[in-house]
Structures are given as C-alpha cells and as structure tokens.
Image (cartoon, rainbow, N blue to C red; front, side, top):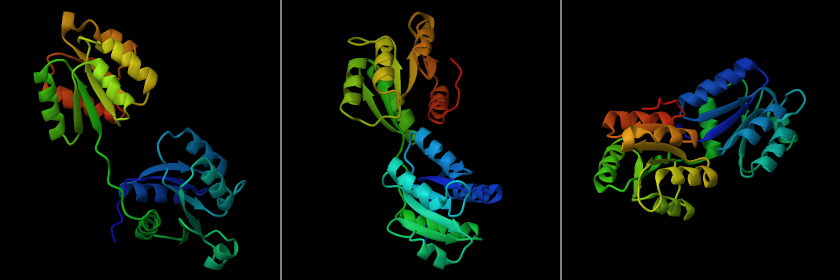
Length: 257
C-alpha cells in the first residue's frame, strides 16, 4: 500500500510525546503537519491557517473539548475535512459514541508509525499529486522571457510568460493560478512598479520578485518597499535566479541583490 502523501493534517493530542510521534511520523511520509495540544487551540490553528486542511487526526478523550465535539466544530469551519480518531479505549466505545461514519477512521492506541501512516492514507484515499509551483515571467524582451522559461522549467517549475504588466494582471484576473511573478520594472504599457502595486492589492498571496538593470537598479528599493519579496539586479546570473526563486517559494528571506 502506498503510504506517502502531500496533504495537510491537523494533529490534536494532549500528550506531548504522542503529538511528537504523530507529527514526526507523518512528516517523514511527506505530509504537512499542523499541531495542537487541545481542541480550542486546534480551532484557532485551523482558523488562522490559509491553506487547505485535508484531515483532522485527534485524540477522543481530551480535557475541555473532546475529539467528537472538536470534529463537529472543524466540519463547520472546514467543510469536507476528514477525520481519524485516536483512542486507547476499546473499539466498542468508539462505536457506542457514534463517532464513525463516512470520511472517518479509528486508530487504536498504542500505534506504530506504519499503522498511523496506513490509516491516514486509507481515510484520505488516493494520494494527491503535488502541483508544481507556477511562475509568471514578465519582461518586454523575448530573450529574457525565453531564457528564464528554459532555466526555471529545468528546475521543475511550471512557467508562463507575459510581455508587460498589463498582460500579467489580465492573466491573474482570468483566474490563472500563480505562486510567483518575476517582473521587470521598466516596460511599456504598464511598468513593474504599477504591476507590483496591483498584484499586492488584488492577489496578496502571490509572491513577487522584481528585477531591473535600469539606472543601476535604483528602482529596486522602491519595489521592495511596495511589497516585492525579493529583488534581482540585471543581468541576472542563472544560479542567482534559481536561488532567489527557491528562497521566495520556500518562505525564506533573500537579500536584495
């Protein structure tokens, strides 16, 4: 049975050692794990987290809010979330409490790493493929667009291009799903500074790398102040480009170039 995954799991357990075991196990199988030590804390985590949560893995018996009530509240907050209950009690207790149902599983304690991974994969169903990060390169020079497309595609990214800021914003408004925009700052029709302002206002989750060689790159500081996540001075070395993209998409700081 394939037990790897890429989904996001919220683990709720009031015993720190069990929480640590579950977290480390699931991360080793490729999952993104959010953790909480109690039901109210878990609801706060779910409310703050901006991405999808695919599965709630929760202890049944916890002080303050038990697993059943937590799962009910989670389904209101995150419709469609699946649930796996953990418990050291006999299966009859789970059945009597009417906890099981569609998209719900039960894992008896104590459990080993493989048992946990197998149960999670069973409830989640067929493994989801990880969507490659999508990057939009905005530059009025064909040669730059072509070079960046080639370099970033070789790194495993999905790359699309636009010749100016207006075209880039039109693509976003049409619903294209983007993780990162790499934009030149000096272009016809709509320049990079205006493009950065528009993206940050309308699509705040999209990351931005600004690049420029005009006037010694003096506009790069302005781009940073307006919300660019990183800046690159043209001409851009391929290694510097790839490092900046990896850092920005990975949530790391990248120094102004």
